[in-house]
Image 1 (cartoon, rainbow, N blue to C red):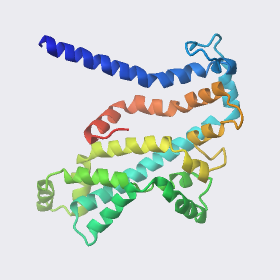
Image 2 (image 1 turned 90 degrees about the vertical axis):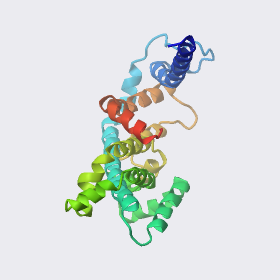
Image 3 (image 1 turned 90 degrees about the horizontal axis):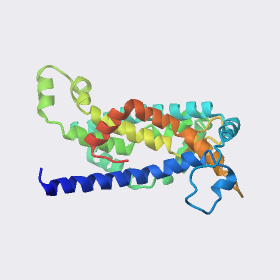
Image 4 (image 1 turned 45 degrees about the horizontal axis):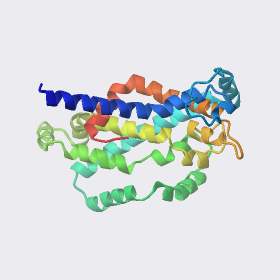
Amino acid sequence: MTMKDRINKIVIYVVLTLVSITMLVPFVWMFLTAFKTVAETMQVDPFVLVPAVWQTENFGKVIAAMDFFKLYVNTLLMIALRVLCAVLTATLSGYAFARLKFKGKDFMFGMVLFQMMIPVQIFIIPQYVMVSKLHLTNSIMGLVFPGLVTAFGTFLLRQAYMGLPRDLEEAARLDGCNIPQTFLFIMAPLTKSSMVALGIFTAVFAYKDLMWPMIVCPDNNKTTLASALAKMNGQYSQKYPELMMAALIACVPMIVIYIFFQKQFIEGIATSGGKL
């Protein structure tokens, strides 16, 4: 390795380290603020970061004000069902658009792409009307409803299937496989990384979804963590320590999921070429 290569490597590592520290600053600030008093959070001096006395009672106040166990259950159920529905429907539709021939295929896929170009807020009113007509407000299925199908997932899986060689299908056909068998046993296993990537994106988007849970589930016992945190905001004043403590507790599910599935997270994002 030449001196120039070493210098380039050092510069890259320094830049990546600085970027990593910058990304960690909000989480460190949240953690430290969660153990401060309200007066300490209002201090003008920006260099006073560590609380003088760690206020552990903020944890008790937040737990008493919010039923986190119920919020965890609601949020995790919504994430699990949305991921399941998104991966299932996107895999089937993506395979159909990529490999099958039928009338109106190009037009229908164009409609899928058109849906991706429209802001999601436009769909809130018709979705709420449908959920209300089905009597699914204040329910888990009401939270899951917008995630039953995904235009982005359909596009992602279609591209994955289009990248596979045609020889695989021809070999499966010669072995006597029909279309469902070819899809289930040959093609679907080869797009596992794209399914994982779609699951990651769906889980993250569902976890941070704020507007839809606040509209469809106004009941505090039926809503999600993001919606419950938004409702903690005061009209005239903010209790930042309690708000940051609640946010810290709300981060636990995604941190745990990442710890157990970090390998799949990295592989799925790397192989799909996507970013969060």
